[in-house]
Image (cartoon, rainbow, N blue to C red):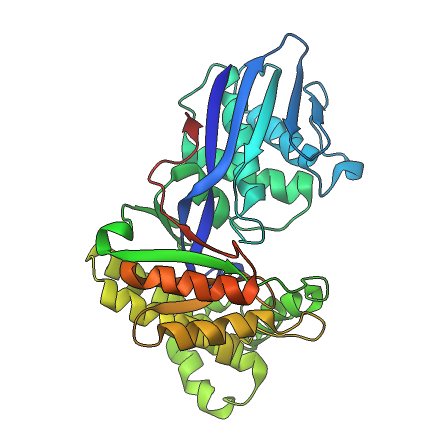
Length: 365
């Protein structure tokens, strides 16, 4: 048996900027998916995951299948389909997967699963050094075309490369960032506040729709194509318009991504915390992705409690799409245990977990 591992990822900056071709920053984490695998002679990929139905993909049938949309099988078939165009001969294998990704943490299990499947496909096809960036792009295609999710590239790139990733979608620029918070004496954690995403679909969809509507006022489809000087000239007339407030968040947030990456490069934890708090306030006040009807107020409660516990000591922000789910927080090491205990008391034992940046991306264990 050969052992493999792919990390999950955490979003660090760029809340709802990717769909407008803005900038984002993410990082691989120390939680992920582990696999033990061996080749078979049946031209079939089989993946077994505890608690889930087995996945089986015939390597003679690699086109998208409508009945598989939204399933793990679609991701595996998609990875094999994309990689079949780049590798000489695919081989079947059997793999047994286990995951320690934090439930409800938004650590992108689908991207980790796709990238891991792709790495194993390349490995057993005789290409263990297949480029990580190409694996990430293949995973995006698999999610878009086979799985049916119009995702960006941030999650897959962080899982494949490891460490931190800075992406400018308009410029098509990807930078690998080498850093960790431990060396700065800081603890990064996520708290799953629960709440229901069931009613959030329309609220999620309204964010890119609102931003695109403002972009179209300037004659372009994406906000990143609007000159900020032109937006700033119009902004004073629209400060109370929810669509323009979300556009304001985009311009401020996509600038913050670069500033936060610079702070990490300079090992300036104080500046990073300042900017992270600004990101959190912008999401709450301008983007308004904290509460919506039918999703409950647990996320808002988690942010309010974090403000009470960390004011002047650390930073807190919504993690991911919002409306329900996770609070991301960063604080000095000696503050973390008190914060964890308070958040666990509020949201249940194990809700708050420390995460660490993992320098290595997908690969062998």
